[in-house]
Image (cartoon, rainbow, N blue to C red; front, side, top):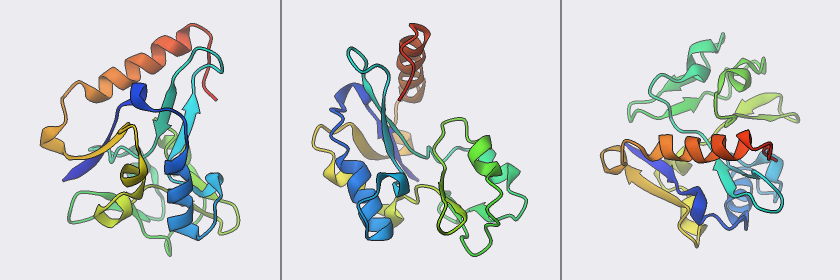
Length: 161
């Protein structure tokens, strides 16, 4: 299975990934409807951090969904059956990364579906802060490294916006 790998120190905050995701999903340039969001730990000295679904092996969103709308497909991706989503938002609360979104207009949760195997966000990411790699190509400490950088910045009182 392939997954999107983050290199936050390469991210320049251009938000092209947000734009292309939103347009692909909805036809609108609306960052609130993007499956990827770019936050910054501090407005002056912080770094940008892309936030998106990590396709967790033990996905909390999947485990808490009372409608069983979230499932793992044959390829191993965590996906949503939108016709089954009841809009309870339990998956949003359960996701430890804040990667789930909620479409107020449609009354349902949404998340990254990896653009069915060809993530647009990766394609438009000029600084290569996002890469789409086989899971066996991902260094075991990559996710831990990203988390440590974020937590270190956050402990300094910088926060995340």
